[in-house]
Length: 402
Image (tube, rainbow, N blue to C red):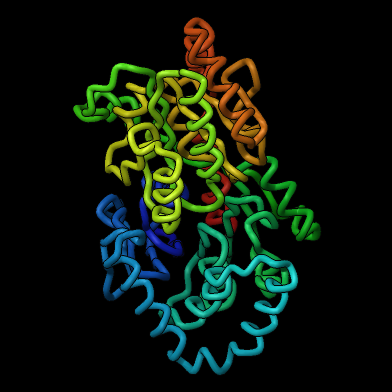
């Protein structure tokens, strides 16, 4: 009889961690029977799940979490969870206590509070698994820690833990209940262990799963830029969230335009910051220079056709978008922050710079003016090792030890 594995995810939206999950499931299905439970019961990547994976959600909405219809569905899901099993009443002290802590830090993140509500209001599974995996922080981790029966439990860490707004109080020390913890990069491991030092013996790096051949194949398909623009093209791929620091990129584009640089900056992605970003773009008269193109199913032709990939973010885990740009051989400019500096060696396979409009602009100008440097950095990026097929053994080893 095959071993049984439960994987829990917050959503299946079009984003980096979700993309990495799809690739992991493709690898893991050869070793076990997999059930998947998605707390929000929502996301367009549901169509990409391997056919062998059994989705436990009784109802699933395939619309984007960033669309108007998707936001309505999310609100309905949260409302149901609040009143299911008297969650609101039972969690009232937890919600008030953590909200007070957030107010004292002057950083209120309602979504972080609601993951506990969604976890406690989620499906109750009677079966016992050989292994349960929380593939992301927040709700998935809480759910596996508190509500799943399994011989072994593992959790993935994708972000700079404290920078993202998590605390032990918010988590209720849930990570102490896991047999294995898998940060996706060395800096992510270090940041996590600053908060949970006692978890060090159970913590090992598990890199994002990347399918290099599939990325290159999709990059050669029809698609990409259709506007006929003749200047330099700059590309960024990522959700429209505060973490991604798009106001810095918009101001950098303003400086590029003022300097006479003939370039256009394109962004592939959706998110809650769209309206605020559109307003800033309009205020600075950059409607034809900084283009929010929304999310696309196949971004890889855009990578292939761009002159420069820019990833100027506040913090990262290990960016799937940067890894995709490296596979395709893009010259890359990235902010010098957690995650980015582990993926890029400055001057060897990309450029790192401070997260300020002036510094981002100068790094871009340096590469746009030096075609030979762009070509050299792109070739070096394409040669980097980004696929760690052997990491799957970290999960299968947990199954074998049962």
